[in-house]
Structure formats: structure tokens, C-alpha cells
Length: 146
Image (cartoon, rainbow, N blue to C red; front, top):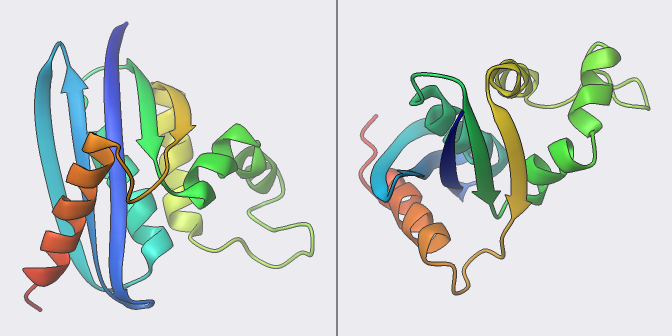
């Protein structure tokens, strides 16, 4: 199984507001940079979208280390929350619906294709690739045209 590194980040101007996402995939020292935007979204949705879009670029099942500064996204997998939500019909312990169910479902589907390892990185610090993803995401927001 091929080993891929995926860095991702999301940004939002207003929350909700115009949002952007950016991702960098690295395989055999080759980088692929992708980004996009949405006219009315949230920061959490953009963080998740960056991971989803990065994983959708892969043409075959891979072993992927996913680096993100989103505790929301990383903890949902590393703490197992997303699996509990799925087992409970995407309802939280208080029986309220889980936010972003559509994106959680997409991430779960992709986690069935790829072997994912989520790693939390500190945002806006000295992580080169997190900073690149942040710039991709914020540039996507700046360049968004409705």
C-alpha cells in the first residue's frame, strides 16, 4: 500500500461566511497542492472539506498520515467520536444531531478505503506545510467570486 502524507487546513471569513480550504499531498517527494472555496460555510466545514478533497485525489487505497490543526476533525477520529456518532445514527449523547453529518459520512466512507492516521499540528506556527495549506485556504477566500 502506498504511503501518502496529507496536510490540510480550512479558513473562514466570518463564521459562517466565505470559506476556503487547502491541502498538500506528498508521495515519493512529489507534492500536489489543491484548494477551493464556498460562499457560505463554517471553519469546521472547510477543515473537513480539505481532508475530504485531498483523499478524493488518491486513485487507489493508500496509507495516509493526515496532518491538521483542526482539533474538531482530528479528535473525532483519534478519540473515536465519529464511530460512536455513526453507530447512534449521527446523534450525540444528548440526542441532538451531529453537525456536518454529510461531511462526517464522507470522511467515514474514505476511511473505509484508505488507512488513515490523524495527527494534530499546531496552527499558525512553524509547520511549513500547515502554513502552505493556510495560505491556500485564505487565498481561496480572497479569490472567491460568487
